[in-house]
Image (cartoon, rainbow, N blue to C red; front, side, top):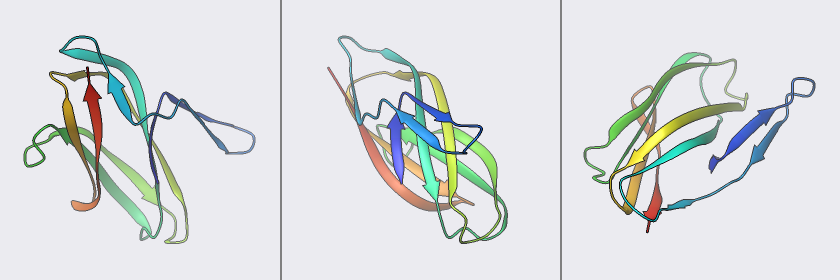
Length: 119
């Protein structure tokens, strides 16, 4: 599962995630525009036990995206659901368009999606 949202609250007592402000596109009056804060929430399953590396790329040119996130996470079991909260601040969009997003785990693509940025 992949969501773009304003925030994710993790309840310390129950471990439940509350997703706030889900959105799929950004509108701006002028460009370049800086989006102050967003969260890319990703749920993974069927990940072998151990440490893994997630990388998330984005760009207007899907053949040459910029790396935005590169971090480690751990899986306890292939049956374990792993919820990754990826926070992005001050993300700059130079122009309107369809921005490609590529997610890799251990250098293997697992999801390709996009985000529309429009005027």
